[in-house]
Amino acid sequence: MDFISDTLILSRMQFAFTAIFHMLWPVLTTGMAIYLVIVEGLWLKTKNPDYYYHARFWAKLYVLNFGIGVASGSPMAFQFGTNWAPFSESVGDFFGSILGFEATMAFMLEAGFLGIMLFGWERVNPVIHYIATILVAFGANLSTFWILTANSWMQTPAGGEFVEGKFVVSNYFEGMLNPFMIKSVSHMFLATLETSLFVIGGISAWYLLKKRHQAFFTRSLKIVLVVAIAITPLQVYVGHLSAEQVYHYQPTKLAAMEALWDTIPAGEKADWSLLAAPNNKIESNNWEIKVPNALSYILEFKPRLSEPVLGLKEWQPEDRPSMVGLVYYAFRLMSGIAFVFVGIMVVSIIQWLRGKFTAESLTEQKLLMWAWIFSAPMGYLAVESGWIVRCVGRQPWVVYGQIRTADAVSNLPAGNVLTSLIIFLAIYTLLFFSALYFGSRIIRKGPNFDLPLPNATEVETPLDVNPAKHIPNSRPIN
Image 1 (cartoon, rainbow, N blue to C red):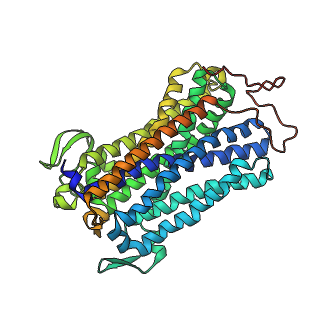
Image 2: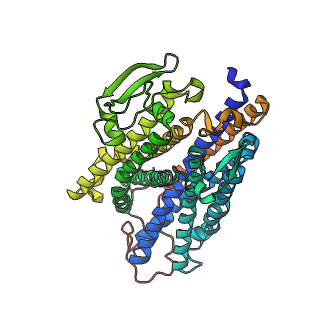
Image 3: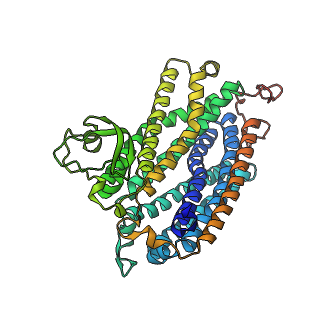
């Protein structure tokens, strides 16, 4: 229990908890916003009201996540001034302005047009409404750009130099275009979209198993699958590129990701650790299952390494990640889920090509539908695991190679930090269960086919609506 008197540990725990919780919500809003752009665009093009009802239904889940994201994200920014004041003072000229851009450019853009997207269906021209939806999606994903730009700079600082402990900017754009930025932004963009696709697909599969609105949710599942055909393999490839940049710029992190204690020299074959039990005390693994020569191909697509892969023993314990086991298994969880998504996508495509992706046949494919349902939370696990690898693997540095985390924490009484941590735990727990409650209500209620169609003439009849009575053809909610 010594940690309760350690300000550094408590501050790290508080930031980790608030970051992990907050990440649950913008992951869905950034990706789902793109889905809303797709279905509303299809509505404008085809005048099929099915797409209109899709936009209205999924927008409810979007706004719920947006609200929780705003409520949970604000304390993270304040912590830079309260718990990490020395860090903010040192890098504020660059890092602070990047976070300011996220708030003024991205968040304000998203929030400013959100009202039109939600309530403007019968108040503005359909084209204007569609532009508002596009701007909401653009703003949401612009947030991803700025946040990942700031965090990438912490991984590979560029664009200036540290003078007497303070970062002096010499080239602002060089700082933004630091070595990690492009691949990191791409990786996170694809992660949010992929997670959102499998959440939408999982919810759609749940409806199909319940035999409710089968035609309606078969359509949403097909849209998800069409986009996933491109996204899931692309995410695996971009993830590989991200691992390559770790190999070149952050060798201590790579060593922790692979639980590699001893250096593998250039010109040697490198085995890949499939599973292991890292032990920091003995600086080795208690046991390990290896795939012969696989790491050489993973890193360089060659049978032998052209560069050495440095082991953790190359650095003193205080200069390398201490939580090797966490980084090691978080990386494998993230990577494993990516391949699970590819597998679900491939099986679904095969079924579609076999003519078994209709509303009638999908309800009978229980195993495939359950795979989609269980995939819904997997994207969150992959994203959170990726951030654990990214941030815990960077330790003991808050700015890699420049500022130690121990030197970046504010001089606060540990009791004060513990109190705020407990308060955050209580409030965020309330927010989490509130989100589950209202989210489940939205899902159980289902789409509302009684909503009037805005400025619609000569439209088709929605697939799940009885044209004579305008009553959804679905089973009642039990």
